[in-house]
Image (cartoon, rainbow, N blue to C red; front, side, top):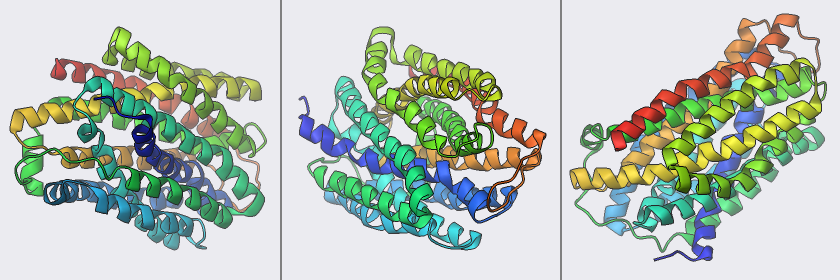
Length: 420
């Protein structure tokens, strides 16, 4: 049965909130630590990565808890609600505290709250419809809403931080996040979980899940790509401030990337149907990598129009990197249920979100290592950076994401072989 637009929107709007949380720390938190609080780049990278290690451990635990709730109540509502009400204040606190240790504590709390919402949220499409075509519709709505969230993050957050300070930015963006998450939690109470036997324990569930090689191939490709995107995300304010001469261009770069991606979602859905999801996925990853390489020249020439045009092309490819793997994910969950007799949507999405979290967290940390290795000077206020640091922040923003996209291509091919 075809889902109504109201139900599709009710689910998809949650991605406005998740997109905001995924994008803002990746875009602004490293810069906030190094250029506002004056924290050394290596220490700032550790502050970003260390809390996410906890989050990677927590996500599978939340996934198993979500499956237990689904068996007991036939819904995943309580965890969704818990994440909805706790994430926004923890997010706001991350940009309001005055030093690196407190930023780390607040970020741990925010990441934990995010896991409570994100893990059951990603599990829902597998239970909203048994039709692959209908699940692609669900994911199309989700990716469009995700794009709106990222657009809010990249377009408004830097502008608010620049005009009113980071603390007010955290409050304003947190309010947007709260509205989106609560709306999605309440709008998806109709979704009933797939019937099945009592869920396995955490260790037993993952022991059974190991046999789903197609899932792990798809997850590996997605994580490597998330790492590449998050490296580029972390580098955007540095390129804007230190290579293009205007930190305010961070918002323009972000809007230039995300705006076209919203329009590209239907095109990627069409290409997936016409050429096959895997072929379309390969095109998206290859295209993103080529665009990232082309950015080296545009940044070296300090060409603002060139950088904005290329980030728009990257946004078109980014839409495919979101829609296509997320459309394939429920297929691996259904295939595993047929193979094992256990419906473990929560366990698999816990692993998926743990991998995505790891990729998005390690990106800023990896970019921070590039800054530290090339002699970036961390100081509160403006400073003239040495030539090696300028080269490092440029290549970290462009060449490094391109290499990561190239590395993801064999993993997509592996998925195709395992799912055949």
